[in-house]
Structures are given as C-alpha cells and as structure tokens.
Length: 283
Image (cartoon, rainbow, N blue to C red; front, side, top):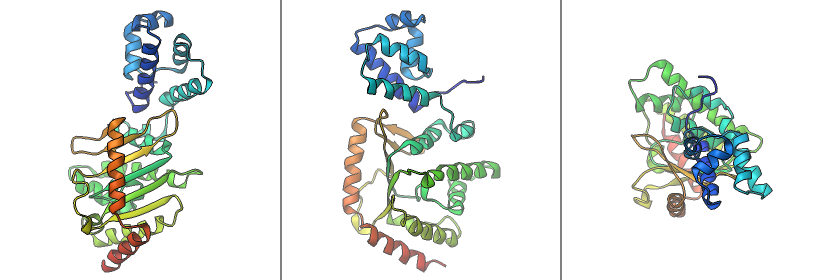
C-alpha cells in the first residue's frame, strides 16, 4: 500500500512524548480522539507508534495539550516530519530487518557514535572485502544477490563519513578481532590498513582493548548513539536473535561500562602502533 509505514524508533519516540503530554494534561484517549474527530483507539495507535502520527495531527494535539513553548513544539514537529521522511535506507526495508534499517537512520542523525566491538570491525569502518567476508561467514545460506545487497547497504551507511558535518566516531576494538580473519589474510591486512587511514580523520578515534586488560565486557559488543534534540540517547546491542535498542537507565549503565572499557584501552597512538604491527605480520 502506497505511503504505508511500519513501526520505527522515530514513531515510537514521538508517540511516547505525545502520551506523556496527554497524561500531563490529565486527558484521556477519548478526550484526544474527540478533539481530533477520531476514536480513542486511533490515538492509542499513534502513542504506541503502531501508526506514525502525521504533522497536522501532532500540531492539533500540541494545541490541545497546551504546549506553548516554541522550542518544544518545533522539536516535536521536526520529529513528526522525520517519522514520514523517506531515506535511502527504506529501499532495503524488504530485504533487511527493521532493527537494522532503524540502525542506519540512527547513524545518519547521531552527533557522536561510540562503540565497543569484540568480534568484527564496526560496519562504518569496514572495507568492501572485509564486509563481504563477514556477511558470508555469518550466514552461509545467503545467495550472492543477498550478500551483494548487504555490502551495498553497508557502503551506503559509510557515506556519512564524508558528510559536511560527520559524526564523531570512537571505536574501541578488542585486540582479538585484529587477528581474526574469515579466510584470506589479505582481506584482514587490507582492513587493518584501512583503520590506520581512517584514524587520520579528525572525527575518528580508534582504540584497542589489549589482551592484558582481561574480561572488561564479557557480555560482548554494544554501541552508543548521542542524538540531537528531540531524540533521546540510545544504545544498540546485537544478539543472535536480533538487535536490541536500549534507552533510559539502560543507556546510563552502558555508558558507564563504556567509560570503564575506555580507561582500560590503549590510547590512540598505542592502538595504531599495535594495529600496524599486526598488519605487518600478515602476508
């Protein structure tokens, strides 16, 4: 159906804020529905993000809830516009999980992206060959077309690195992934050399958590997104069952964990020296 949108993080964030405003105004779903000439069930679907709210509806609800602060109104109306805005990632919505499509949208909006990775280099910093190797090993049943689609998707994501105002990226890599190659050592060597090149960018910091640091994060990898207003900070944790988005107190806990990992990691110069040393040993 043309114009149909699935549930996204954007829609959920907007809906949650609308619900909080309605409750603060001491109004029921029926009250809001009557004002909009809709039923309460429609308002409920807007608040859960099941059906993304359109800008005119958001504007009407803000009037009903007495939101007069211009900055708050503008922020929520921008978010309403974002909910329905189509991006390049939507072209992949039928091929990839919704969580990964949301992930690409987060990357495109984040001011800062901090990550800890234990098994593979983060996608934004991968070479084409490394990306293809990782995708093939992760799922041997994928067709060549599906692998190619996954590579294109990752390359599209990497375009934010060349944006006029790219996000600040800090990636902490477990030392083990510097030695882990899927098949061809040349692919890993090219990836390590690529990391050294990327580290020359003023907005990219790469650090290594060495073997001597012990099990600082036995739970594995995670990513933190520092988002501009009106978006909340959000974390992403991957799992075999799919990606999990974390907000609120969960983000605070992961932020503290990230700081502990960072304190134990090598500094940037030490990290790059180690990456060069490992790369030089590969043939």
